[in-house]
Length: 205
Image 1 (cartoon, rainbow, N blue to C red):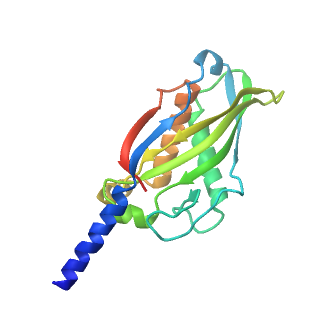
Image 2: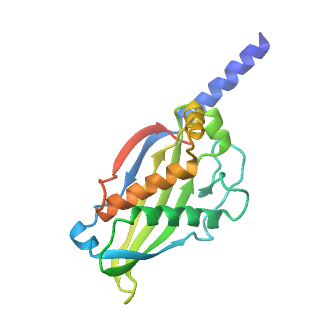
Image 3: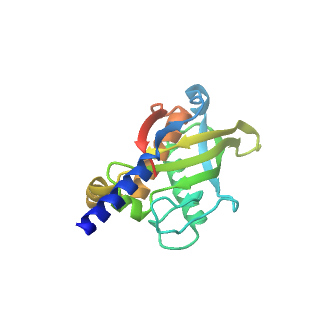
């Protein structure tokens, strides 16, 4: 009886903590760029800066307090791992640009907070991958800034519990889901894909 009550108390406390994290999240940029402009570009380089000032956590907890939380790659330089993920995603999202003018997309990360494995396993129908960065477009030849720095928020609902177990069984990972979402966000911002802006309410970790 005492054990059952203790389990209920722990479960209730966990639910209370998680309910306090419920909020509104979004994929957002101010306005899509004009396709009449971007159709004249092709991307020759994607440069991703992950500043040393961003904090990194390896804590095995539901919600580490840090700017960078990433676990699917082996232990190592998390900043370099995030840079690789983002470079691949942005290249994928900008592949629709085939114009004559060579441009460089320059990103500075401000947050890359994916779910920990602990959160992915213990949560159900909850969790958010928070991906935030600043991006600008530079002419590759003249270095002229064609689009000054803008903030992009590319938050997406994270799969957890049975949903993520099913996703992994069919070959999906956090990395593939984040890569696809960031690519869709970039394509929408560049005007080569559907407008990706939206908001959602979710119990977020």
